[in-house]
Image (cartoon, rainbow, N blue to C red; front, top):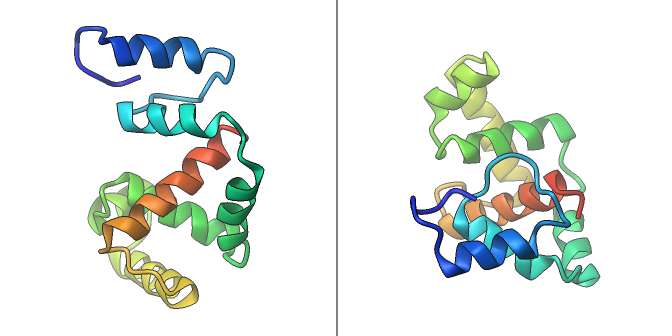
Length: 123
């Protein structure tokens, strides 16, 4: 869990709470809190989140997740994915048109982060 240099009581609690889940990679404190809440496996919520993105091509979804992880920076995302920035802009527009989402809207970006977090941790 990426947090402050000192181990806070919240971080300690989350480390113990998520030990059985074994999330992949590093987590922000906010993501760890979210995982702890979702660990209760609310099936209706999980299914709703996955159903929301089921019509999206998996490759396009991975590109959008990478874009979100790069702080919604087209240039950095393009470098990581070895794409021209115009290609990445095209994929972003395609995703936004398909999903009716705006990747400049923080709520939409958070929803994609939630989907990615659930997917990566097999929830």
